[in-house]
Image 1 (cartoon, rainbow over the protein chains, first blue to last red):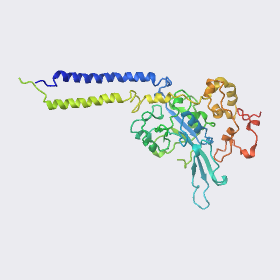
Image 2 (cartoon, chains in turn blue, brown):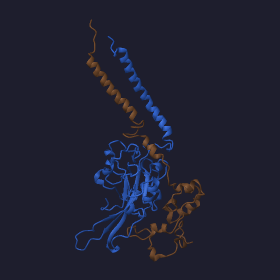
Image 3 (cartoon, rainbow over the protein chains, first blue to last red):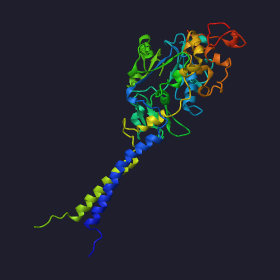
Length: 269
Length: 150
């Protein structure tokens, strides 16, 4: 009786499978080489992410709330129209306490019409009632321990070796976990691509040696951008440290942001 | 001497296990992008793809190539911290082809920053436009050298 399975055919099948696996192992680096030529031809050459560590410093004493940074960010990154911002400016108004209230200050008002892009309307109370008022530009806080990266189920968002927290738009499935996880509210779901989006530190600019658009455009240099691994003598970052008492947003969360603020008030969240 | 013969049910199990493990490796090789794991648990090529976009704002250094004279004036006066594109708008096209002129400016752009506002820091020069002057800003002020008079 002739069986359909003899040693020869079994060995042939096994050999074929083995050859298949081996071919694929060879195909992988080949695919990588092809991709390198065709996909990333537009990327700047000679940028090594492991040789940089980016840092942003924001001096709220210098912010005049003109909204140019918000506008520049939208234009530079093609952020969709509507209430979607990668950076925005908040206005804090802290009123004087009512007499006999036993409080040091009144209830803080925070507003941010259109992300502050077109300026701010008159405050809702007369100047005499305002204890003080100021602007706080906000953006991705470049956390050392990013809650948004920890929750991503598909590895679409990550801490790049140069400190930028980025999103791989081709990998993002739009589940929105990271949007909930970000304690600073810096992420949103792009209504067009349906993927999560956030500040990339203008990754296409910093890899070319340019400053991020918001830093470039800020008329008062309220935003200072620098590289901790390549500090130049008389570096603006160093000066920022020397001249200010530096604070981060929500330090109790242990996210260790690399966006540092000067002139923060206790009301700023 | 009796030759050892693998019982057929064990052989089937071994082959099945090999098949499953093999399928896993084949599937992994096909489905994992080549650069996955280059820097960490993500696609390393994403960094290059994000960096591949063309910048929109040209930056002050690009302006310096032709307009260094104006930039010199600017650097000596109160508007030294301003980027050209903060007032003149996105000018990369103008940099590539000087015939395409940057966006023309109006006085509304000055008051974007200089209109008085309680929330603005006190050191910053502000005016109440209503009480200040009804004409054009440039009648009395030189934008590139705000401390000079025309």
